[in-house]
Length: 317
Ligand code: NAD
Image 1 (cartoon, rainbow, N blue to C red):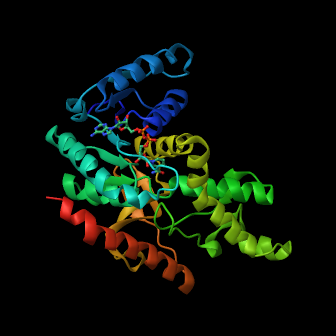
Image 2 (cartoon, helix red, strand yellow):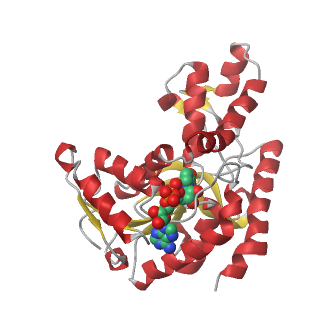
């Protein structure tokens, strides 16, 4: 493996380039390779992004390139594919994006890639499964961005609601990155105090919790309605996952990861808190979900399983 920290991005669209721009600003990556089916787009993005280098606090080699660059890359990030249109759910993208993500994964693997995949293309839980099955890599090395973005949205909204720094909000979204996600409120902390206790002690209505969650899952629809796409938040979320890997952080992030009995589920990718380090997913952090939350989680997993069985598996080799 390269001694430099090298990331290959496949899909130089809104999401991919927001991630690239945040890497340029935050640093921590030595080489960033941009691949896109639209080669001019990748070259244009290379030129535009490189113009920012003199004002970036970090050195970074940015190049439009091809799949041979994957050989010594630490991470390949996949953000290529169709995006949601107004009113469209993420699951509606599944068939078209499976074909795209499968082809990309094959090309990456043909170039002896030994690193870690991060998948953001939607529906991300299903696309992560496609990358796992196509690459045949160990599950630790295929990570979906899962509910990392949803969790950021939740933390931001709770911070605003309680007027505390979102950095002190330890709350997590589990399940599908999509309409069937859930918040295990009993496991949410503000600093060192349980969120539920804060609600009770301050006589805040418990219905507000559901309102906050509704706002989170509705956020993508609302943003897409207003500005056609969402990209800055996911760009930062992808950057966060990359840092956790490259800095060997053992950071806890709600990524989409393959289930083998954890949370009583198996054979699917779904968002759960997991410890992320240079090897990828080190371990899934298991919560004792209450009956209601486990039911919601199971429902979310059922949707994933049905999609895999009815649609995705037919498209895999
Ligand atoms: P976009 O249309 O701006 O970019 C997609 C890029 O992929 C384009 O540049 C296109 O040329 C490229 N592409 C298409 N097929 C390709 C192929 N076979 N090989 C290489 N490149 C290819 O879309 P976007 O807004 O950047 O969204 C990208 C994906 O990210 C979508 O699926 C979207 O739903 C998803 N997304 C995920 C999250 C998340 O939280 N996981 C959040 C927002 C968007």
